[in-house]
Image (tube, rainbow, N blue to C red; front, side, top):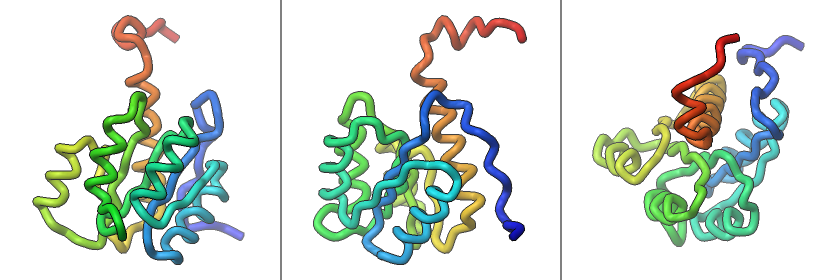
Length: 152
């Protein structure tokens, strides 16, 4: 069966990428988890910002978080602020049904990698996750390696 989504190339990273999907909508969590697990990611899910923070503190190897803005108990931006205090912290991609410039600006100011609007295209979400993983991998390199990459 042929897929409409672009084919995921093998990960250029050392390990299987770990993704956390945080959304209070069960169908959204399930769809994103299924999509990314099918592409080789290890996926965890959470319904609230508080639940997400507890998972992140237990599982230090989460690479990327897909984080909804409007969550019960603790909103997505508040959770983002708390996530950014962790050292090291995973990359965070905000996913929201609200096209609000102020919310998006706040998300970027707080350290979000990107802001994706619902309904989203799964291929676009995957491309953003891969870019976020690449950015995180680059940030982990020493400045020396970034400046002087050996010629291939």
